[in-house]
Image (tube, rainbow over all chains, first blue to last red):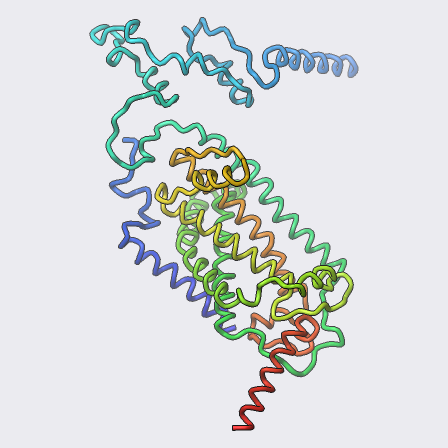
Length: 42
Length: 397
């Protein structure tokens, strides 16, 4: 069961790490659609 | 009294159908009188389109503005340089406008995109109906199977010996893939259809929080899923190459109905089918997911359609607007995910409640020796031969 729990914890770590790494490439799931450079109707 | 009422209702319905039949024939809407709108669209045009009928669009696709007929800009209600705003929008609508835009990428240049509504209708209709229905059908079939066949037990009961089925790294790879897939499946279903049955229960604000959390999990746990695909592929691909033994296993139905135990190595034909389903569809769902994760930056359907047309002689569109690429990616992502979910639900069943001793393989990695002999006899023989060889080598050195 250690392998299973370790894998689940790793999946969460990877998910959290993605939020830190991806913005360095100019992308963020949280900011997507709300960034200043996004296309706006106004 | 009732008879008269029913007769009147039948007459009224017949009259309605007769009117409709007169107005629309063979899915083609009859051209209405547009004199009241000066030739512009009427309510009847809109209603015909909503009824999925073909409307002759020439009355507006060919009405793109005539500078010689336009009011001067100095006059009241004057037009923009010879054509009205409505004409400009019709030009945009029919891709005839010569417009200059700020450079914000190809997607920003698409102001009107026809495919949006059919995509939305498929997403909200057949995708939810057939996708959700397939999941419920698989669950129902498994429930029926469980009560008809019962749990598959170890013949003669478990022995007092175990054998290591999977190493810790194999179990880690499996659970990384499985855990992330379950998280992606649940959050994907919430994103696709959650609003329909959760908003009435938890309200808009509650669902908004849940949807935002689902989006975060879906976008970011996806990387763990892709890593899981790579890990399990590297570890197990050599054990999943199809061979003649698989055909024997399939012909025996895996022993599920006959209670026989066809021979198998580390993975039987059923497990190989699950493996290749997960690998092929897993790569496909990952690619369409990446296309959605990086909007407009990874278009792949126009090229795919081109390849399909050249090989299969099909006639799929090979020129797609950026938004159409996203719409196809979204639909394909959902279709593949539903197929995978159906397969994985069956996999979860047989790996847990459906078969005695099966979960141990991915639990602590140690399975009952008798279970292993009944379901993977050739693999047990290989492992025992290896152990004997090692023992002989150790004893001889």
